Length: 310
Image (cartoon, rainbow, N blue to C red):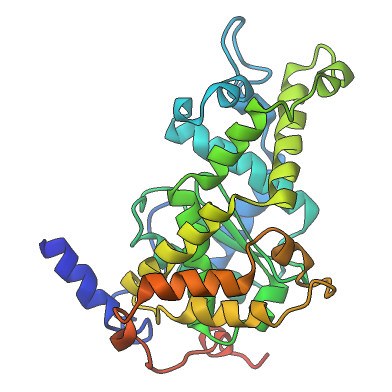
């Protein structure tokens, strides 16, 4: 009960007012609080070896991670979950590079990790980054790697909107939504024998290719609508626990509601998520009047946080 009261007290202040509580370089996790640590950590992902997924170094008769996913995601422990996330993060970085903006990278990583510390899995190696992409998108992988695009950063109006989006993505990770989706795809046969036939005798290569197929399928198709609605609902509560305006996510959904699917910047986000109006209706119904006293604080823009005019 004491913990609940502490969380409620934290939720009543804005992030700006909680600066004495939030350290400049948030400890814990593998991402590193400084901009150099973030960029170096994420850049090194593309150099990781598929053998750690149960490929080339797997002993004979020992199932690799792909085989385990084909059975049930419950068989995946946290260490393996993090490794799957590393491979998927490397895939995303192979498609879109990190934005070369250390101050912005540091800020997004600090904000994301502060929010993640209030989640149900604070000890994951949470790492956040900004992709050099003009589209409006956010991506999460199992184990705590989360990316937003430069196009999204440019379009959010303030910190509460960005924080609401990050809280939504953090909730996906905490609830293992992507891990469940990957496991379901593996069991339904998305990994065809064609992949194996193209890489005969190269078990490590097969594992890497299989993860690539699973990842591309996941991020182009999106998660189940129920998972998205849950991430909205729980993400609002998480943002509030982190001291952010809980209506930030609702505000970002209002922007999505006015976006057109013919706009290339929004095409992927709109095609992989439920309609913005449906999301707004459900999250506002879940919020009710419980969060009304937690809004209306001082608005802080991303430019103010990073210390520049955009």
